[in-house]
Image (cartoon, rainbow, N blue to C red; front, top):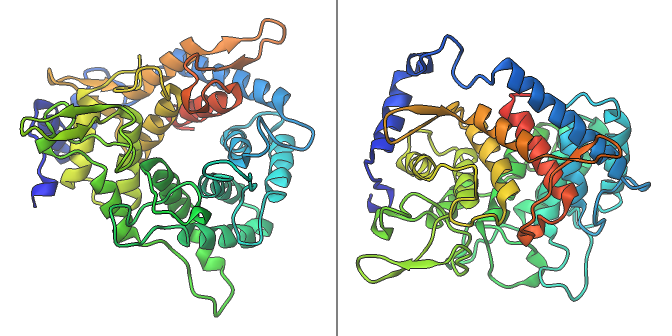
Length: 389
């Protein structure tokens, strides 16, 4: 199929050979296993995680929330950061956070707060997807019904109309307008895949709930630039069918093309994997090809400093889930993304001189990244995934 054609760049050739060998040890000259973070750097990374969790613990409000309580996803992301570690305040912080999130559960099964007059309302899909994932990760059976109800809410939010948005998810289903984007689709796919085992606990006689994964994969594919977009953008992903967040370009045929960019490409990659698209599928390989050809930790490729810490977070999660420990380069070499990302995030951490606690903040504030709570949660989670913890 034309839509599944990929450019056979030197990087992609390396990816194919990489997958075929099945023995990454042959591709590194050192005696260490591929993707290993050197011990001294790993210790620095763990120390940065501890400082970040110290800082988050000090920022948690009395009601258990973090940052803006109108958006419980901000609390859920910090909750997840504590769940993935062994911080001394883990039990206290996660218990308070879970209790707060439960105050945001609504009769329709969603986990959000309605904000009247705001475009996108309470961002019901975004908040529900992130919150249900965090609650499920707690492993607490008393939360089972809440997660089951949230799964019904997300499944009911999938847009299945006969238009360009079919198969995707938007911010808030209550608007009634046809709108979807790859960010919300990524979070919905993540939530539904990572909480899928809870369906085995659904009461007898109730039909199990899921999204239409086939249509999800089709929507994600529509957000992927094809070879005719041009070498610079082919294989990468865009935000949604109508909003060129990274700008546009004109291809050789004179057609305006939405530019690919880093964070959405990693989000698209993981959404494809969660939709059970095979790892050797041309759509997956071409996404990996784009990320390798545009590799950088100095910016969110295509967006500069905008969304930089979400980029780090989704990069780590996508490559970790894809089981890619090494990234091929055009010169035939491979780089250790885990070590590089740990080093970058350790360097970017800011230290509070009064407490010694550590946090992260993006001076480019677009996409809420001027909020140090959000950015610190992104960073701690990225470090934990890069460290394999």
